[in-house]
Image (tube, rainbow, N blue to C red):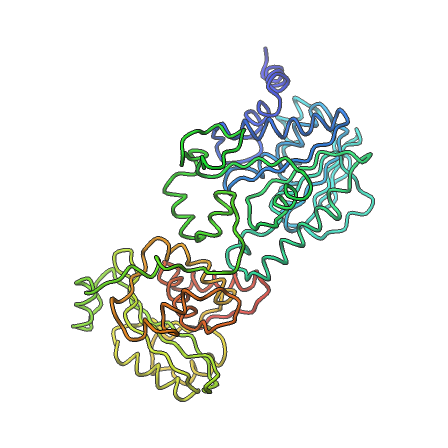
Length: 498
């Protein structure tokens, strides 16, 4: 049997999973890594398409972590496989924007156009325009972003993959996240899932969970969708009937190693990690930072840090910074100016000192000069680029070397969500006792009461989140550019100056 006949027989016998095994190398440069969950997803996607071919509708949701090849399976390989036996099928695929939807569609089309595919299942394409392409059998593919108009188009199979930009789920405010989720959900139920042939379709949602009211959440709760949950770590308290795992904490696949998952958890924070990794989103708002995060205290600094305090010479491998949240109204009802001294040592982040006052412009300059004079070895002083930060930067040029204006990166809530994982890991070390730690408006109380709603003072939280993001390793220009990109991605201004 020659290779062409062999491959046709494998796909005929093993269906979509057989096609995945053979086609992967022709569609993507990454190496195919077999895993039980891929067989599960392949079987469910195949059943949905075959049922539609026989005239039955299927409403299916698949909740799976990022990095598990969901887009490759549902948005790249599924349609070319279906066209090997159902070339007249029409497909509508969508993602959070036109760019992503069309990139996935192009990847799928190039597989169909490949010599490997054409030798086995000759398929002549007729028209290729933007996110649209079709064949001479009547089959077609339309790729659109959330909110796009789909006038007069209908599909046998309709797929929504990645409906909300993952970055937004990490750095957006509750209002921004809720608005994006509502837009995606409205688009799916109000427009996309109704664009079907003969009132019948395979409707497929596949994405990592992001919010209790994301499309999969609403689909299961309000529309009776069958939802398959495949968390990164097996959760024996809420197992999915199709999950192949039985041991608590067992990983989904070899690609998602324990080390990689821990790194993702720190980067995302507990809330986003619960949603995206474990497919168990919790509502936004409420307490972000809890008591146990504040319990990691030091009575005596590590010897290297203590030596720096005595000699004024920073030890190799340590990093010291000051971080500032500014306001310039200087009234009793105003927000506070907060300056903090932080040091990174041996993977932990030590809060060394803090100054806080309701200060006007001149008093703020004096506070910054005073703190810089007390810690002369510090060569990096980061300031959120807000209020009159640019004016004070110009005034202090030459007086405080290393003054760095950084974009707000989405604001205090966005930054706090990004560093929540650092707090949860126990890597933040607070002084055993300092007058500014306690009290109703002290450092601990403000952090425990912070909910991102803007109802309380958040200046100490703003400064600490700025510092922890920097010390986490995003120092220098790369970190600044990432903050600028975060601000830009949310439609917010941001600039950096050194």
